Amino acid sequence: MFTMKYDTKLIGYVTTFENYTKARVKDCFFLGSELVFVVKEGNLGKAVGRNGVTVMKLSRQFRHKLRVIEFSQDPAIFVKNLLYPLKGFEVSLDEGRLIIRTTDSRIKGKIYGRDRSNLKWMNELLKNYFSDLKIKIE
Image (cartoon, rainbow, N blue to C red):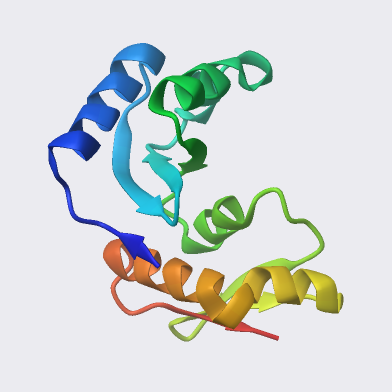
């Protein structure tokens, strides 16, 4: 799954990322071997750089694959940002649940992940920012 425990190494990654990109980091964690940065709203362009050059340089420096996700106060937009680059689905908020609707079974499978791993880490991350929200896929 993913670890949200901050240690000196992770804090060093955040500091280096912020100093290099000038983007503000809201959260940082490891998802398997991938290093994930959640940046504040409006900072995604600064963090990624033109044509992804900044992310590629930092990925080589950190020796980890990087994923940068833009935070949003709207949970539906935040879930779309989590699932980027997937397309072909709709996200709506209904009675404390985020409902993801798609007709394509391949997209549904990618959202779930092997053994529902993607769904589990997205639900945990949502729990950190939006208290009582769960994702439901239809």
